[in-house]
Image 1 (tube, one colour):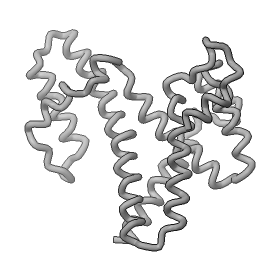
Image 2: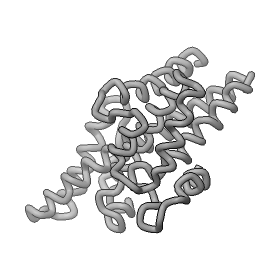
Image 3: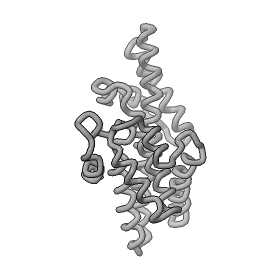
Length: 204
């Protein structure tokens, strides 16, 4: 995926070649979706199909929900620290956020209050993690369009990749006919996940 992205954007100069953070994983993640499609379409063993789908759902959680929660916590933590909070207070808040995320579905052990301390992005690349959630949801929504449009989708997708970093993500996507301000576009991505859940329930 990254190689294809680079190849299509190769006509740009060094300043506009590299895609911006929200679009950096578009080609590679989309390619992963296509590989998973192929694996699932050829699979006849329900147990293997279930495992493949569970891996997809695990990845979706780790990339969307977890990273979105990290992004929220990062904003909260910076505000708390500005107001003089201690590490213990920030850790307590992290645990509370984690428990709220899972509700009664998962018992979160108290030791997880310290998990935020080992997330390297919080120190090395602050306010970076939102791009993981955005990128994964973008790919799911694009994938939904691809499944609906087939061949007609391909030139638009190539246009997104060929743009490199020559414009803001919203502009690059708009030129390809994608309005990121339309909730219906993003709903398409969540529908892909819902279909995976439905299939998993059927196989269970």
